[in-house]
Amino acid sequence: MWPGAGPWQASVGSVAVALLVAAVIARFFIPRLWSPSGIKPRGAASSAAAAGARLPAGSLGWPLLGETLAFIFAAYSQRPESFAEERRLLYGSVFKSHLWGAPAVVSSDPEVSRAVLQADASAFVPWYPRSLMELMGDSSILVLGGGLQRRVHGLAGAFFKSPHLKARVTADMQRRVGRAMDAWRRNNGGSGGGATVVRVQDEAKSIVFEILVRALIGLDEGHEMQYLRQQFKEFIAGLISLPVKLPGTQLYRSLKAKKRMTKLIQKIIQEKRRQKRITDECDNLRETDHPRDMIDVLLGNGSDELTNELISDNMIDFMIPAEDSVPVLITLAVKYLSECPLALQQLEEENMELKRQKSGTGETLEWTDYMSLTFTQHVITETLRMGNIINGIMRKAVRDVEVRGHLIPKGWRVLVYFRAVHLDAAVHDDPHAFNPWRWEERTDVMSSSGFTPFGGGQRLCPGLDLARLEASIFLHHLVTSFRWVAEEDAVVNFPTVRLSRGMPIAVTPRT
Ligand code: HEM
Image (cartoon, rainbow, N blue to C red; front, side):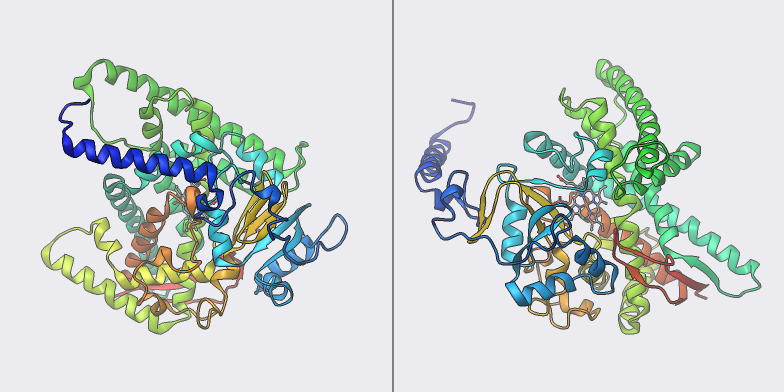
């Protein structure tokens, strides 16, 4: 018995034991009950075909090539989802295909997709193109499974959600955005009062990279930051490239860049370990109870599994959203707002009102202020839905798996195709229209049917709040300080989502 245990704890304890026994009975004797996600448990799948689970209808396409070229052609068009839409009409929203050299099941069915996302490593493991696997390495959280993935995920999620980190990111981001916008103003004066043209994508990338890298590894702006960014650009260029490692190839250059980044990050980790030993010995030297960055969080966990190699590899992977996903979210929001004057006007009014309130009381803006801008959050949600920065995710079945009556044979891939659900007219009215107001009625956006821009289940993006916060801060300062006229630009969806010209806008300061 533990201190304080009394009758109340005893009765709670007996209920817990009863539930545990019931759960064990259900787990081993009634397999169907243990499948809230819609995935049949191990062992049941071999009898899946007999029980009625069937391979989805569809075509495996050409020998070897399968349907990869058709997928890529569609991906380069303005309607990448047409690949899935055409097949949905023929075979239904879950169909079989052959992509990237392997047979695959493609899901644009919200329930099947949810079940795949929620499944654990006993059914599916992440799958990425070979070049990406090669560059990320075996210890990347993106490919890790089991307890280690859960630990790193949990630590990252708790850190990125912590109010302390959000407050720091907000202060850093305000300062950095302010500096960038001062430069726009200076250029504005310099060009005789005419508008200055800035490329939102480039500006957002350099701002967000510095802020997130500081949160990850504690590096301040300066020479090493510039060096890291240069190397990172070389690294990221190889993520989707030919899987050939010979000198002169992109993959070879990217691996070299990764080595140089690893050296710099490991130097930082070693120094932090040394500092930690000193502070652990002299408790009174402890500067703060809050970890300053993600490396501190991982070192603080004290697990031997979190080696220097694992930490540095993961810090590099965590930089991908800093150079890619978050800046693209910001850029797309600016594009969609430029094309929808009504939404821009409402966003301006909301943000100007906040600015007026705060300057009236002399307070500075906190992260909670940005996150409570309801319409701004709807704009970000709608940008995530329309923009599909991550089009979908691939998993590989480690055994025959039955998902809601569909059989996914061992070794097959599953493409959980977010894009096809986000742009499905059966799920969202007029899905190709930018309509932030559609989110007004939906109280819990993340549980909205099939809305998974940040994935779901055990691998739900741990940086989702941070992404929204950074986008809100950028938009707030842009709309309250400038007016702009956007130049023509087009969204490119493959191999990653981006604006082909970087979204040039001509900005003039508000008077
Ligand atoms: C617009 C911005 C972002 C989008 C659209 C996005 C999207 C996603 C998606 C779809 C996944 C799930 C991958 C899977 O299931 O295999 C994911 C995972 C992840 N994201 Fe994000 N993300 C964004 C920003 C961020 C930020 C700011 C961070 C933090 C630095 C971050 C860190 C991660 C990590 C570490 C994982 C892997 C989680 C795991 O496998 O356990 N992301 N993200």
